Amino acid sequence: MKICILGLGVIGTTYGYAFQKAGHQTEHLLRENKRQNVPSRLNMTILDGRYNKKGKEKADTYTVNLAKPGTCYDFILLSVASGKIKDAIAALSQNNITGSLILFCNLWNDREEIEEMVGNFKYIIGFPTAGGCMTQQGLNSVLFDHIMLESEKKSIIPNYGSLIELIESADLKTEVPHDMLEWIWIHMAINAAVTSSAARAGKIDNPKQLAIDLMSDSHALSIAVKTIRETVTVVKARGVNLRLYKNELLPYRIPAAIAGMIMKRMFTRNELTSRIMTLHNDVNDIMYGCKSVYEAGKQKNLDLPLFYSNMEKILN
Image (cartoon, rainbow, N blue to C red; front, side, top):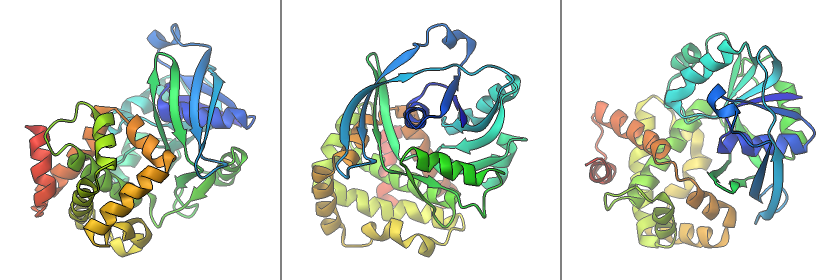
């Protein structure tokens, strides 16, 4: 299959690598000013969790092919900050790039807003279970064994079956929640709670160190659990039935002190999870989620003392 990836970012390139290794043609659409400096091959360091629960460390290279205007693709993979989706869609349209759109983004928007942003593109909402960072040496990333994906019933793309074939060809599984967009809202609420708890001293300029400190401190993790209980009420206030997401929320329902100890043990034993926590260091992206949940809570006059206290230290 032919896959277009917008930009040369962490998520798109990680999955581009997986799809390319599976025999598919991957091409990146880049701005003109970035096309001249893009490497033809990119060094990859990847902790690959597809074949081993602990993950296997590997070093490899990824061939960077550039997309040409006027090309029709099977799928277009879009993983950008939420505020940049309209610009990304405009870039696709200006280059006359067509294909089914896969949205791999943090989305605090409702369906109507998303449909307005994507325009005439047929789209499907998913969520990556991968992460990392670009360095001068190349891409350092983590890849889990599955992708979160909207159900075929709720999808409007005409080639859902082909998408499943693409994912499975790269030795990836799919997990389908009750509603993909609601799942993302819950995911963002959980992340906002964890981030604000990690940065409760008021500084967020070194996310890697904050993550390291949090994962090794069961008391701090218990505070994060209590804060998660607050932030998911923001999602509930948006009309989401949280009972439909029992599996996602179960770990945060047990006593916070016990949950903190369990989470600390999990981070110690699970290299995939702990590594992805330390590699995500885009402060703007992290703060987008935190601010979205914070502002929504304030607008709905919700009582979230731990979350508000920590966020106000960060914002001030």
